[in-house]
Amino acid sequence: MASKKLRRAGVSQELCERLRRHHVESCKDLLSLTPLEVMRLAGLGHRRAVALLRSVSGHCAPPVTTLLELWKPTAESFFSTSLPALDDLLRGGLPLGTITEVAGPSGCGKTQMCLMLSILATLPRSLGGLDAGVVYIDTESAFSAERLVEMAQARFPQHFSSRERVLQMAGRVHVFRELTCQDVLNRLDRLEEDIISTKAGVVILDSVASVVRKEFDTTLPGNLTTRSNLLSLEASTLKYLAHQFNIPVVLTNQITTHPGGGGSGVPGEVDSGFVTAALGNTWSHTVNTRLIVQYADAHQRQIVIAKSPVAAYAVLNYTIQKEGICLGGEYDRLPRAKGTTKATTRSQSGEARDPGPQPIRVRTGFNYNLSKPVEADGDS
Image 1 (cartoon, rainbow, N blue to C red):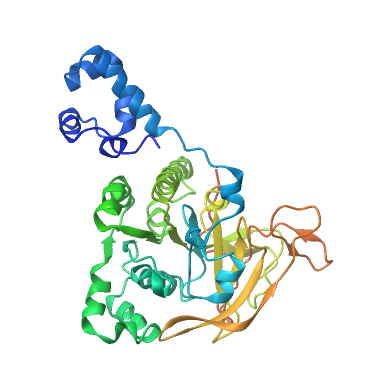
Image 2: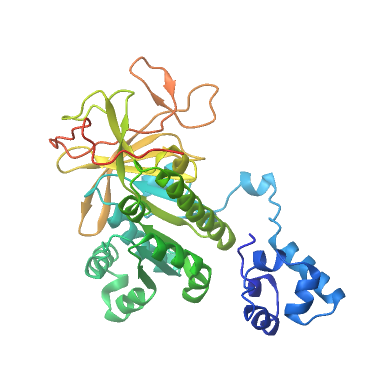
């Protein structure tokens, strides 16, 4: 909350400009000052300086939410994925004000999911959209404008039958290509202004793992701690903005190898470990909802609801078509175990267990040698 810009905390434009000249731009910057320092930098009397600090402090206080508001969410509390079975399991779609992660191996459709959500966000509310802009942070140079337009016209042919509507949609998707950790941090530092200026209804980061895994070799001393601190900063910023603007933040994540504990049952894997979402357990606790995309066979893939505050563990089959993600007609849903408060899977003995870290299926026939992993993520 303290990272909120002063202008959004009710401070006048004139006073903001005066303080900005002294590099005081956020509520945190101002609240770090004494009343005497505020008097000197803002040119205010003691009474007005104290009143300013008190007012800004009040704007930073987290709002009170009643149990009734949490217990009976409305349709406006979710962002529909346009995939009825997935929306049904998630009680309406991706929850607003939270972080949703889509993790999985290359080629499973993570970026396709992001493109589809970008189109949906720009649609009118009458069509299930948010009638809003999109902030799309691309760290892998994977964004394709041609694919976005193709998907939009194939998925909603009637709405995007005219060139004017296609151009309107394209103009509302704002792509920022950030290819280093510092670039991503700089973008996140300006993200509040970006959300306001673009009237964004969703923020997408594709992918959160790409730049940190390229720049931090976690086998070197100190790198794991530095990387964990950077990821914590990213997560706290994104959580704050998701909550502050009540919008969904969607991240994609890569895969890594998890040593020990049995295999995932995929051909070519051994029992010494399995493939799971990257960045470690500490990172997995920062996301509110985790969807895993994985291979079922050569043509069909699966979405696994691996972590959710409202949904039980479930598996849905899907394919990737011209119109994007297309679900199959059936899904496997396992009930919660007796006495537990979160979704569980079943072991071979029928015993309930926590789903994470969830094994992920890689491409059938791919010889994934876990004795020589591509990259094994540590944890702090």
